[in-house]
Length: 154
Image (cartoon, rainbow, N blue to C red; front, side, top):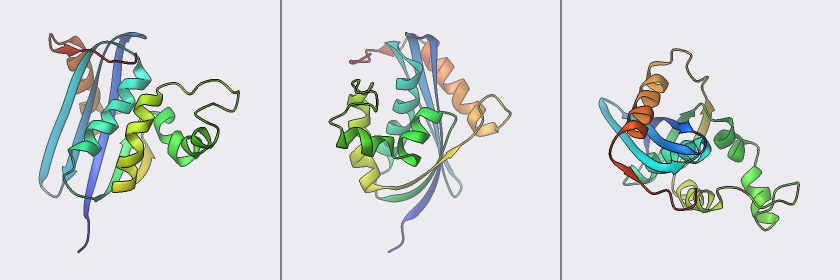
């Protein structure tokens, strides 16, 4: 049985860094479209970028082939440049021997990337890509909403 091929766009937003934040994600499969978003009381932009990807991949009910578009070099490079592998080998320390930021969220990525075959693609933010712009709108709207939740580690 072949896997479903899903296209995902994600974005995070923070009003102040740290400050109120939100994420947005758009999942596309054939003629189906699903939009996700959530706002947080106090967080960072990088955490929102990460939460957008985690939410999108968690939404998938079976193993899929995913092309994931993000405007976050931080998220993309963690996987395409194998930063996460090095962090794990080094006991969650950076090359500078400092603790890796956002370890709690990186740990949530690992099982998701074992389930799904994810290809990370970078898209320039605020450059007119319709789906990236939609994710930005979802993230900013969520950050400004009255429906904000705690971001435990932020």
